[in-house]
Image 1 (cartoon, one colour):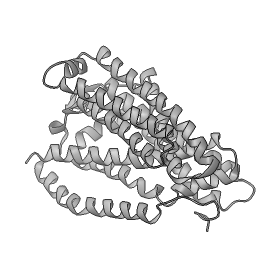
Image 2 (image 1 turned 45 degrees about the horizontal axis):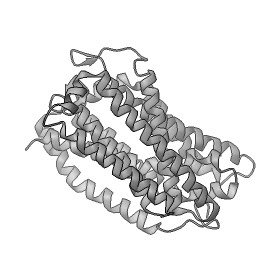
Image 3 (image 1 turned 60 degrees about the vertical axis):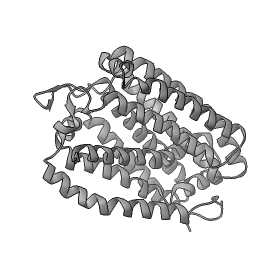
Amino acid sequence: MDYALIWAILVAVAVFAYVALDGFDLGVAMLFPWFKKEADRDIMMNSVAPVWDGNETWLVLGGGGLLAVFPLAYSVLMPALYMPVIAMLLGLIFRGVAFEYRFKTRTNKHWWDLSFIVGSLVAALSQGIMLGAMLQGIKVVDRAYAGGWFDWLTWFSVFCGIAVVIGYLLLGATWLVMKAEGELQRRSYGLAFKFALGLVACITFVSLYLPWRDSAIAERWFSFPASIWLWVLPVVLAVVTIGLLRSLKQRQQGRPYLWSLGLFLVSFLGFAVSIFPYLVPRAITIWQAAAPDNSLKFLLVGAVFLLPIIFAYTGYTYWVFRGKVKADAGYHD
């Protein structure tokens, strides 16, 4: 069995699960500036309060899995992305504190609202910057990071950061469509439509820019048989975009969120096609970065038991807290 490939798939699943689940609660926080009423913000926070900390389990699994099963990739990526990683963790800490203190204070609630917004924005922007830094390439010499402290900071990485922020805003808006009612839901429809157009524009730009900039990615996309993805993914992207916009126009409630996840999945697959089989693009492959097979097999036994448990309690949590969020019940009760 190819244990390195199996673990690469598991880590990819964990990363996508994090983006799909934690993405919407980061997005809900970043939507606060569009909703000034305290009652609306209470509903928004209550809609994610029961699940937000469980969502971040997938971040731990993805990062911890990278350290345990791909130590060489971890040793290269961490020095290259040290500053955005620290910024992301600090952002997540600030928003976590805001959950606990916002409903306990009477006079300083606006400060905890600001902490909730800024912490989520910093976390989302940092994640996008890390993605952009990986796509543009990381300098590696003799299996070690050979770049500078600020190689991650370029216009392209910042653009990717903004794209991820827009994507999370879309997930947050479609989540509110599903969980809220009345004026809050109505405004969320309009915001989701705008963010959907913005995200598709960002995906289109990156899809055109990367093959133009990187000959290896261009060869991957335009040489047979890999070039089949050149035809499949854009068609799927168009179908998902039309489905999302139509569901928003028709005022559907659950489907816009699922269509939004479809946009992220198409982007995720495009990223995988562009860099496979590398974990550190154009420098270190999955098999070069992997731990010894004995370690991978030992860890896989644990994953076989752990992953179903995580899926089970995550699904149960969402089932228990399904339905609309009411203004008179929530996190503070």
